[in-house]
Length: 331
Image (cartoon, rainbow, N blue to C red; front, top):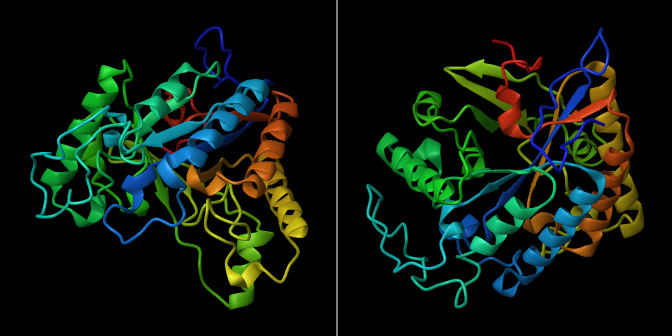
């Protein structure tokens, strides 16, 4: 598997043979903590003060270093603040920031997480820290002025870290205008394609044994669109999500079997990408993997990725999908 060289930034776009480029995998993980549900009641999926989410991020970064797997971490911009007064001027609708505590990291670590951003950037592997907007706005439901303000606020915070943002994951898969993204230097966007349909049995099969759908990336209005499922695919729907219990639909099946099934799902999806040459994009929220059951499967998968030969698979961050030498994009 072709990966980042921790000692230097280098391209992973060259093929391993003269005949074909290796298959491509992209992993993206949403870091939102309290901002992911600040417009919704409650957050039972999160641990107090984000303790478990931070703990499992450390585990994830260590495993990624060990196996040489780069990841695109898309973070809500407000989390990069050490503190704020809760007042964020802009063209927002009334009440949008009501949940903002207006305090600091020590007081409300679910709403401030500069430590998380620094941990990603300090890893040995060259991960990407991209944007998930400033305050988790639903881009497709807001006026253009709000989306633009969110981009500018988030990009300014990344700039303070020395990071140039080239890609975005819009909250709850709500699409922003591609031309607006391009105007602000965003070259890649992750968009979800709904796949639900058919019977309850077919949906259950899709969420467990798969196969995971594969879509070619394409350039639309100056932005490379990489596609994913509407549901988290790096983690399992059949296991507990963060601190929330397993959905009742899956509980009759033994936990050990559910973990084994998802591990097989991840490997089969990767093998299918290698066989077909189509890119695979797996994603989840940070909270999804922040329990021992999900983490055990993800950890094993990272080890599997690290064992693959470089001529078989290239792991690319989202920003690398826009490389002029990328063979993935229909332009």
